[in-house]
View 1: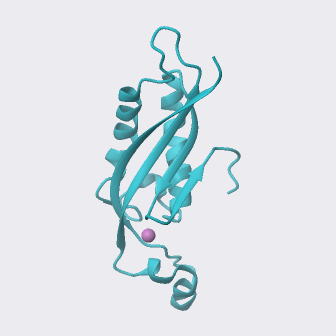
View 2 (view 1 turned 120 degrees about the vertical axis):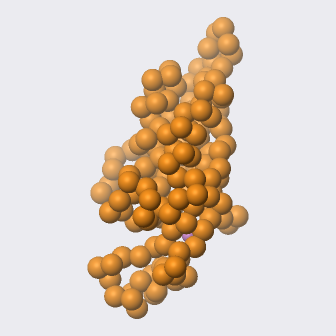
Length: 143
Ligand code: NI
């Protein structure tokens, strides 16, 4: 059997702002626009987690989606849902609370749990708005 990709969608909502305290007020507004709003703004995020592999010969599954859903909920959704990404989420401490950074952090969190269960993470897709989403495929950390 050739490589097959399977995806589970979960959702959460969270608040954030894009702001650098080492930049002036003017520069923050210039670069981040209304995402810099002092009193936060929120999104209904959609998280799409894709695992790749060969379907198991007994189950026909690449990974059990019920298990994948459980892993995502336990390790990611529980930590992010109804939270302020800038203030409440320890793994984002000191980092920009952008969708790009969040997608990468979610990848890092889920990778070992998916691996433990015989899967291989292939993609994290994080949808912030109807028009904006990020896709992350792993790779070397540029920071
Ligand atoms: Ni935003």
